[in-house]
Image (cartoon, rainbow over all chains, first blue to last red; front, side, top):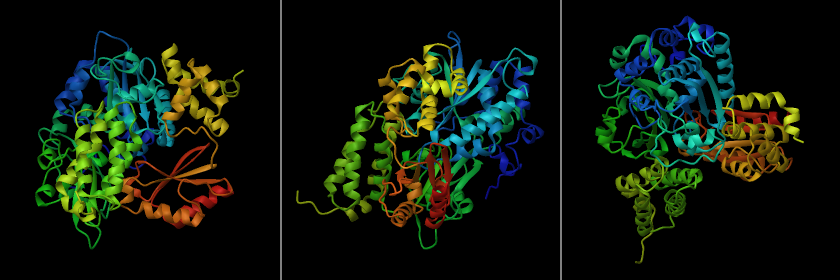
Length: 422
Length: 166
């Protein structure tokens, strides 16, 4: 089993009190920030991040440096927004970073802001992270008094201010354009895209939105270099990833491991396997938004990286690995996930608003044993009608588990449905 | 007259300074100002909506729509403390539904109801990013939010008794 000799993101597990500015500084903290501000051009920073192969950790896996290079240099000012809305059922990684290693995250935000020449950056946290926002505010104040933020940083002309902004309970605000609407004081509903945020973002200005985990990678990429970073993980998915392991496992929790670690190693070595008397049945690698993988030998041997997970019919996404054992009925599970998506649908586009409503009624009846196989086919039909028609990815996410659950676990549906007369 | 502004002039200044100058920036302050109002009044009153709308230079209707859209704003008084148990998939796989049911039974209420003394409202809510430490809940009140993780019915009742004693 791969034991991380040294964590890159969850460094607080190796270094006690890393959430104290002095400890952080004694362990190389802010050296990358000093280096970019005093010795590098914004383009150098973007090129280094491009060379590192870092990909967005929020779920899409889009190359981070490439995203930055799309910023529109003709329109000003520029903004950086850190997506700390973490609301996907099964995801709890950004919370640990911000609670225990906040300065590395904030240093990452600063590096990104420098690369795209933004003087203001917002950190959008879900409303439930009220105490974390308070903590980050204190960290920001410490960084200001130490001269790492504000004006004339390291005696240069670089200025930067960081601000926290609390959401108020809406899953949809994790979608980047809805998040920007929410900062603007509007309903958190997705925008039509294109234009994408690097062209037209916050207040109509060019904006880079990155996930907390993505940004937390930056200080070490800058101080140790792209080549060092590329030596970890796989060729196309370099670096480490925090896998949030939950569900039917003996030791749930966050595990930072190189990308390309297998499902088997995560679930059975790190997570210490399935509770006694049960067998693993399915895996949802990307939280409630995920397709359901049949947990056979082939799936368990699959490396968890952006290229390999699609081979077994799912996406790596945010790597929120939910483990399902043989005590769980898939119809019950679908009713759970659909209930979530129905509750969180923002109501802007019809396929998601109406589709999740009907899917919820169907999954409810099916899981309660009051439905026939015709109803299961109707559920499949409704899900297919949402496919490719929602305004944002979050609407599309609602059908992943439904379609793959019905397709891959038909026996579970036969077991709970009544024979139809038609 | 804007009672919120009179009482919290400094706090409001700090909030407004986070956002760009001008109308668009003022509008951005609507969410933090609603939190401030909820802290002050216990819930979002009609008066609070008017005050926040005035500070953000938007209409009462626009502020009301924000209050309706986001689930952490309350437009009616309810239990002093909201005990919000996550029952989403990862928590449910770790027994959160039975936990919630037993907790309510112990309190003599049903899910979504408030205890007769008006102190504790128990609700089932969506994912709180505590999936590995289920059963878990947050306590929401005018003072803020607090997480309680790796809970049993007994430990949750302890938390609730402490809340009741203030």
